[in-house]
Length: 429
Image 1 (cartoon, rainbow, N blue to C red):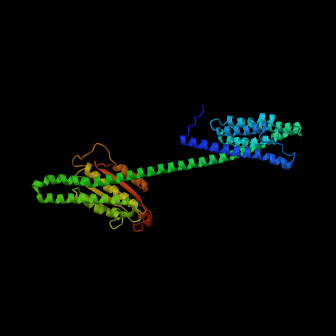
Image 2 (image 1 turned 30 degrees about the horizontal axis):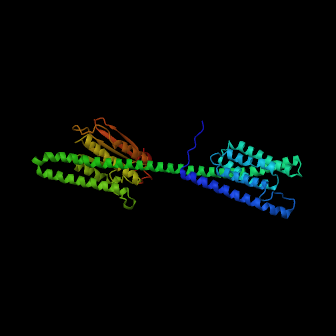
Image 3 (image 1 turned 180 degrees about the horizontal axis):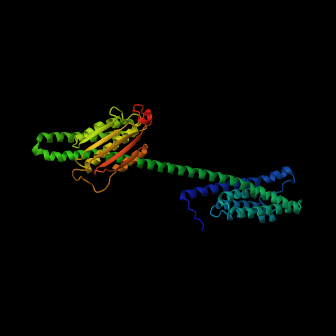
């Protein structure tokens, strides 16, 4: 089964026809000019060149052959295999009827036809066409030399073979070089197009990943603050009649939480802008105390424990890793508020090791049934993806008393010299 060629657009076909007609016209003009000059060359060179006189029957026969060859070349594109053979066959009767130097003027059209064969005909179909043209060219040359006299049959055969190699082989070789360069250029263009498509696919993948990351952050921010706002609103409903002052305090807390979520959203948008990048210092391990205080202000009992108490938990931990730890604590507290309302939460930051910082968020068993959407969100999945991004370890699951824990181990980029030595490192038994 052979592949069907896609037809060229009308404008392209018209352009090709004009190019073929122009090439045929140039070939005809050059051949007719040579035919007109041959008598002058014959007068100057004596018997070296013999040609029919202008206006005689043989002269018109040569001119007619040149015209037909030009017409076949102009219409050769629809029949790329038949047209070249036709151009090479037209001089055969001319060599029989009007031998002499005028027959050589038909060689120019054969040269052009051989080149077009190498350019247009497929490589596996070109040899039979080239062989047919070579045989016809050799016959024309040999018959013309024998008919002109003074040449033996053996010499005419050798001359015909040499003429066929030059007239057919040389243009075919040039055409092969041209086609090879075209194919190489086409392959290079296809490779560049493939590289562009691959780059576009990578960009699209990166954009999708960034969108997913933004969705994770939006989820964390909204879950953290909105869960607190929901609990404050629930408390406010009960306090309106019984304790107006407490209700006012809850309303102020709701406003503070709403302002905080707007600020976090602005910071997230600022991170997406190179010219307005928001700093990450307020989303580090040093900010965990403020985060836990906000959660306690939202109505959840909680505590922050840092080991050792005077240690800087962010020492040696990269900025991105600290942001991952901050987001883990924020998401864990928000989850505890939703799924274990009223339960006490504890955030433990163990910075005693010199190569890592362990952050654990534990909540006790819920005092009442928490709200649930009926399906999992982005919380734990987002935590794990962020942990893998910075090479951290994440573990989570239920505790023995019915609560829940989330543990994150952040690697230090450099040794924390402020960490106290353990018994093994100090050499004490």
